[in-house]
Length: 78
Image (cartoon, rainbow, N blue to C red; front, side, top):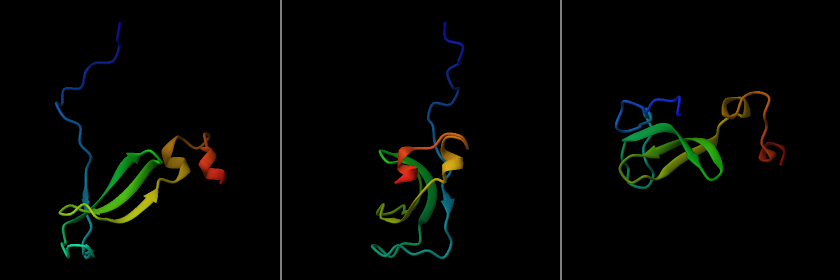
């Protein structure tokens, strides 16, 4: 028996924060947002243009924010 209830929300979403003052170098749009993503390389915080999806910045989450302060990934030591 599953003890976890199905979420009431039909869709999952992530909060995207506006990045004032940033302009996309590809399409010159000011519609730039910052948000977390999970990719094949792990968790990242990205700053992306919402019009053309150009990535202005992509930084890995700090180790203590990813999996807890005790667990480390092999890539943290490379």
